[in-house]
Length: 153
Length: 135
Image (cartoon, rainbow over all chains, first blue to last red; front, side, top):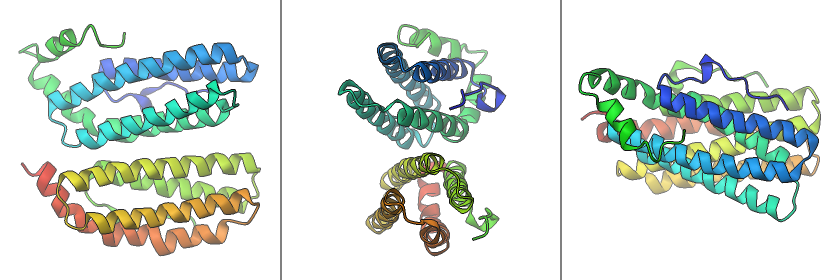
């Protein structure tokens, strides 16, 4: 299975979100390498890091959408929730000793790329507009500081 | 079966929904191509997994918009989604038992998906737009 190549096509034009997405892509690519070596112990470690990081990223993104008044925030949050549930069920199967990594990697790759390119891009122009308007007021940087403790670095 | 082309008339005008619909069509095209060309089963299975998962996610997203906007035909719309899910799971079963899924795919598309988008999805557009986008 090919690695995900990070590029402008995966950027939504909101720098903190793009950085977070890139980090998730890095985790997935790490898992792809580990899956070739069939190293279960390391796969499990990275998988847990990926899950933790993704949950923090979702929280950050959802807060941002709410702050900007994105109309479909509730539906978007539901999609995040279903994804977290789906991945958790894979992790549980992995813990039971099943070999699910290949299937999980297909899901992760497809889900993330689709989600960024369609659903996340849908709120980006609204966030950019808000960033532009509020630049003078320091709205965006105050939002960042507000969530600094929670923002996945 | 010919490749499915997205047409202007399929657009609901709600960008995020149109993008999701187009991705479902893309996967169905991929699946059809793969089964047509006798591509190895693992590849076909991969596309099938993508199609099923993406469709389920899209339905959840769409239903959430319908619930929030108080769409009066929500129950009917959900039933329609359930029927499509049933077709997808039949398709998966047939594939797993080694059958040719191409005829069922044609049916999924021509008889159901575009019909659903043009008829049923277009019916909720005003309700969703009024609630979310027109204030």
